[in-house]
Image 1 (cartoon, helix red, strand yellow):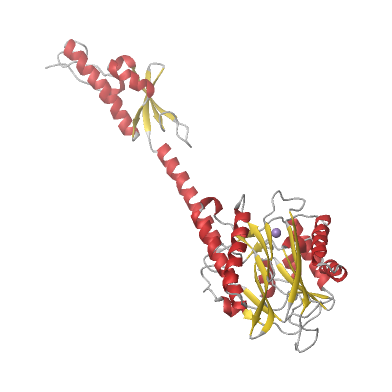
Image 2 (spheres, helix red, strand yellow):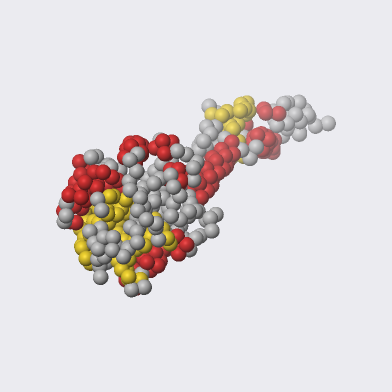
Length: 446
Ligand code: MN
């Protein structure tokens, strides 16, 4: 028989204008969701996720059920973002704990996606259970970079897993045998960015009431900077197995950032075959106290974190999107430029017909340039064409523009000859005349 008592608190912090964190606190289910995605996105994602989690876990209150509820929450958030362009790209972290009964035994099932965390405070020791799904964290674990390098890595805040950003998500799941006196702490990164584990441990060690402890932790994070939304849920095991009774080992891990994760899940992305949530299931081995160097390493990480506010999620889709967008912008620029420059027009300027390179009225990216003075005046062309010529007559090429002017001159000449055959240059005349713009060099009649 296990009984739990809990308290929770959340705060916008001192920098952010809205609180996109959410806490869930029911008799048996507890969770923290840290939403992300501009405007309303983060709030919507966190709300949809916890509501779905609540309902889905209620329908199947087991460890596997909790993990499946997170997968279901992922699907709901993802589909909602597909249906609402305003909410594209929204997502949320999710860390949740639930009391379940499996094989007649009370077990605390714990799940995580993202960089919110779950800790267990047991026997005066604070141990981090969850492993952050951040790029820097994954790189440290795979041995690509050291802790020190991670602290200053440009991608240290990029999440490698979150709810709602792709069709499938890998969920980490732990099963922990609860002992009377255990305290579980679920929190968003707004708490762990500001407080070091020893500071958190001190509050948990000295404040017996879970609600008061939660309030105090949030207030302390505010005092230490409050650069992000802060959310805390404290869950106490008030009745349960006595410590060290028939439970062989305390199932919790120290925050050992250099050891492999409980599940070596792939980084989010369609290229990785989705791993069924059950494959992430693991009952963790015995206890391991906080290593002395942890505080120092944690301080370096916190300092680095403070440099970069906010987080982003990088996925194969994000990169693909950026590449395609760049290609579209590039192509559009050249299409417009080509359209602007692949044209000529004829226009009257100071009574003379001029040929310009470009578009009438000026192009989007290219200002027209005069390329030819024709020497043809408005007196040399039919009067009815002058209004159009004043506006500008568009042609496809320089040759076409020249031909257009030539034809105007020729047709005006024809009209003149029809009226007065003896006009110079007309077939009936006897003199030879060169017309403007080389329109004709007609010689006289034989
Ligand atoms: Mn946060």
